[in-house]
Image (tube, rainbow, N blue to C red):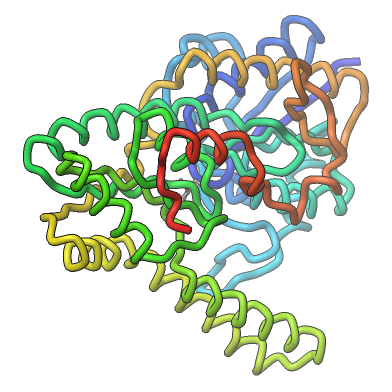
Length: 376
Ligand code: F6P
């Protein structure tokens, strides 16, 4: 019996998405005789039934292309913006799923997408997910595709910033993406030889960073590169965020909606202030060290363009394994990288967990061993 499968890509785009779509579609069609369709723009396309046939021409020549041929969005199935409101549209999505007689829906995404896909699983759809994000923060997989490409881009940027920082005797603070985790900043910082690396997992003290930079100057090095993860926070800010999050939890327990809303707003305000903190940090370092300082925000350049060979290979492995799992009738899982293997992991073990950099992680020790200041 021919199996019908749908694919969508959701959340921020990531290099390797097209390689994964191609992997699912080629293995699905050529090895298992499946019919494959794609939904445009993430869960929104599933709701609106906007499809594209994924066969022949459509999945040829896309291995090396960045972004996603299907388009993506950050829309959530249960809070879909419709007519100025946010509505639960999961039943409408289930109708689309049934209309196309789908045997499975493949959702490619990061932590948020895993959660949204899980909601559709609970509605009765056969779901399989793949872990993609440049942040590398999806639980239960050793790595996500997109991370390697972003690591290459961020490392090259740090390399390039070195010569200009050196020539002008400046501090250059380079902000690296990563959402609430420090994988990308830590990886690129160590690979690019940053002198200071700040990650969300290790709240920093600005005086410690200034001391390290001043010590470098005493040692004859009149420039410094500070790689800061976009989610990095000072010790004080981290404490305020923890307090606000505790307020949210207390209000939730008490069922106090008003207090919960106010506490949530506090969390959002602190997070918004954090976005500004790279500029603030740079000004503080200039004042404390007397060295001229500049900021470079790498931003979306980190997830644009062609995927690295490592990501092409990984996304193709995950995509083809996904087709095999669907053929075997394994659903409700994320296809994860575990050691040398690619394995299905129940979605329950993925959803609601974030893979942060463990404080005892070898990359952290490595950074310390080569004299990097981590701000603590
Ligand atoms: O999750 C990937 C990511 O690039 C994060 O590193 C970053 O915080 C976020 O997406 C940016 O989101 P947007 O593309 O919506 O600006």
